Amino acid sequence: MTNASAFAPVGLLTGKVVLITGASRGIGAAAARLFAREGAAVVLAARTVGALDQLVDEIRTAGGVADAVPMDLSDRGSVRSAVARVQQLHGRLDGAFNNGAVGQRQPGPVDATSDEDIDEQYMINFRGHWTAMTAEAALMREHGGGAMVNTSSIGSRRANPALPAYGAMKRALNSLTETAAVNWAPYGIRVNGITPGGTATEMIEEWEAATPGIKDRITASSPLGRMAEPREVAEVAAWLLSDRASMVNGAIVPVDGGAGA
Image (cartoon, helix red, strand yellow):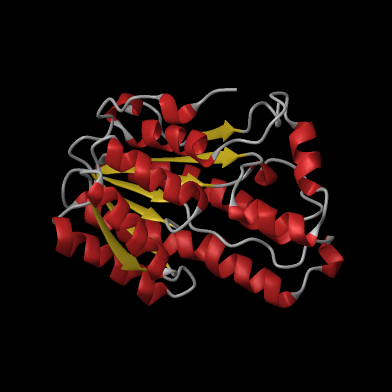
């Protein structure tokens, strides 16, 4: 098993200002730590401000640059205010990791999915990213461009009978990612997505509580025989946000250990 935490930082994001949504836990929190170690000044956004403040303190204690800003992806005004706060803090935005999401509250087939679940999935997992991306792009354009990475899901690439609303919105996000990549390339803005497979996060634990045994099934579906650690997914996002990925645009990159192969 790869020990991702053993990798020494190489300054992949040195000098960059990066906004991370959904930064209070899971992949977002791992990205916050990693991006700061790789030299970025990170602005961490989520609804749970207390968790963000603890993470900011951790990063600053380790010598990094970090700030927290409240953001509710279901509230357009909150999203735009968070991006405006990045401008107040740093005057620019070089990278955005649009990672915030909510899991489907009640797993089940299409005809058992509630209107409330569908509406929440739309507001947070799709419309929230659209709002964030447009605000981020406007700020990036003022300073010559930047890069975005959107967190989608392996569940967007195929039928998702247990989480149909979640899978549908993530598939829509893939389309938005590809279209934005074409729209904004002339302004020096790259847009890519990642589709993580089973990852050892709080969201998976919540799914396990609702559907006992799902973790074992996810693990069994991976050719590597395990779920990803959040840090391993964040590593891919860090590379895509870096100048090393300067010719990668409009890609939807699997980070699933071969589960989707």
